Length: 133
Image (tube, rainbow, N blue to C red):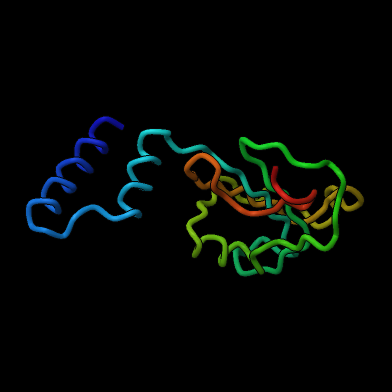
């Protein structure tokens, strides 16, 4: 992290010396570097083991409090895993390959686990359980 902050400071000094200054976005970047980033996890259950398969259920976890009552109006912000990947989420776990009758009565769908790092206080606005607190 110290290297990233040092790099930011060097860039800011160059911006100041050439007259372009430091923007609000530059300061947000510095704040994120100082505060560090926090891991958020997005679980997506899809109707097939393909990244372009439709989402059938989802859950979202991060370093925040949320309500634990399911709210069906909170649909997944992504149509499929591919869309989430395009928004910066990284797949860290793919669905296991199973024979058609394995877990036939308990399987929710094909589970993908994605991660993304956000600055403190940032992330998706809501979870399937309600708005983030």
